[in-house]
Image (cartoon, rainbow, N blue to C red; front, side, top):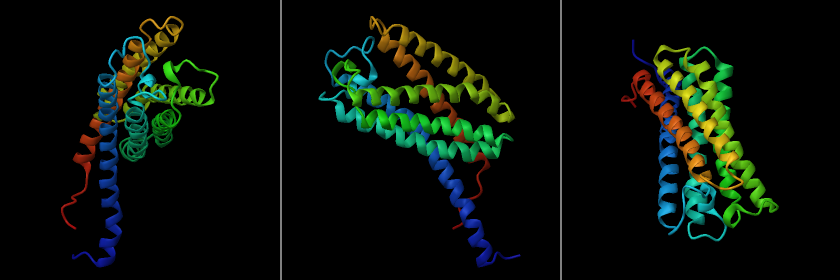
Length: 235
């Protein structure tokens, strides 16, 4: 039976939605890579910068040579991409699981991570991140804390969602391990702040573990999106 023009117009939004979902999932992959590249590149452009003791935020501190690279490319750029990924994450996991409220909660936490990164980019820390009384730095610190805690919570809650689908169960175990590891490194970072001994290292380990979780989750969902996508070849 031939498809009428009206039927075709009704099918069009679903196909567009599938393409947008895949594009959003790709944003999760891109955000993870952009964040890693920004940190490495900014560090290389700052002779003498110590990744072991200095915060990531110091790469974008006010007045530094890498301020705009890290603020715009690292924080804001990755944050915008993560917010887009959160929308696609929700659209995908709602289809794959039977826990829509939990899917919405985890997607909201991922989006909060992106929003926190954007806030951290808009409000840079002062040189050395050593001016807690300055409003801009306080807002930067709050934004960064929001980003870290939101993504940690998302990873820890992930197993409750991913175990609902057989194709996501391996991701469930990995998600819990990433959340626990990220939380441990964040605690170690906080405990070392008084002396700044290995503070930067612990922060990068926490950021690395959680960013890798974001990348792996986006990659797995992208694979499933391609497997379950409708045929987009007919226009």
